[in-house]
Image (cartoon, rainbow, N blue to C red):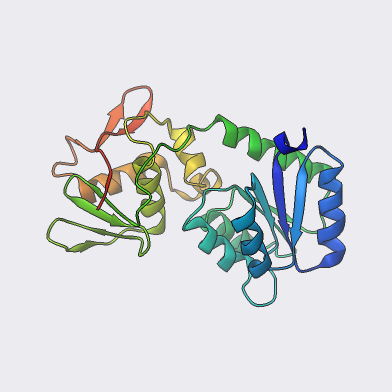
Length: 240
């Protein structure tokens, strides 16, 4: 039953890479489709559900970094960058934008398969997103999160600055209210597992977020610590 196989989207403007890779994935236990750029990828993503995106960086028009940023605004689909840009700064930028992994061309197809398998296993092990409001404006407690603008406002309408990492963390928590999430799960859900190497631990991110949304960060009521377990978001989100 091919419908049950993981579905992968390969986005690369180089036909000599995109088509053989798509065929290789199909021969190794996956459904796969190819797109020659961001515009074609968006069209396919509107029509099909994908379990993972293999994404090139250097594409004409909208590059892979910009496309990844836009996908992350509405989707948590795993993304693996596959690119000729192998500098450390490019790898860090990719992970910071929300990618799950980063491979450099030329690549070993068997290693790519192994990395895809690892990403998919990790994704299946994560807590599922709950039925949270689909609206672009979500209210919790005295706060309002505008997901379209990626901005947080208090009850007086005053904006509170959030870093991209703080925004992703808050959204992950809002999407899974009253569910205990371990540190490892939060790292994966915020697409930051590799970012921990650059002093972005979950504990520090939670502490910074509490300073912004809790009345008393030392006695938090919204993001509570579960000793030995992780963290739980206790507010009830609702469409504003």
